[in-house]
Length: 179
Image (tube, rainbow, N blue to C red; front, top):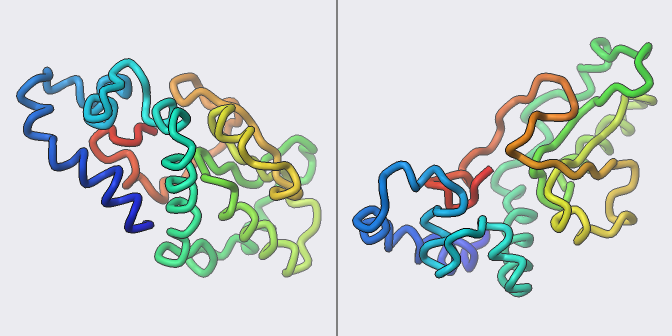
């Protein structure tokens, strides 16, 4: 993760956790609108992303941190995505091959899609990036060739029905960046 993001956004909040806990019910930490992050930024009532949208520089730093973390958490080589070819149901034209929920700027999906194409696999299904509307709107379509952007609300049922492996949940730590 980008050091400036960790220091400027996360460390300052983590440092104040004892103060937060002294002034809030313990269950408040699970409420994204009463999270330690919203409280430490004097923005209770707003979730992490709503707060970042108020500060373009902070949002840019967050996006950079999410994009650059791949050097430390490689996408390819951890799972043989091309091996899934035999499991693809080609009878369903609407099938989703992979869905990345809150997948940053789609960088992981682009790598997986390129790997699939490099192995000669064609018509493997939809590649979908799901996130909140402001996040998806900030990504120009030309930066996501062949990737479908789908607006979702994380507190409503998942619209694409399939199995979802959990890869990274670190950013959900203490409700700072509530998933």
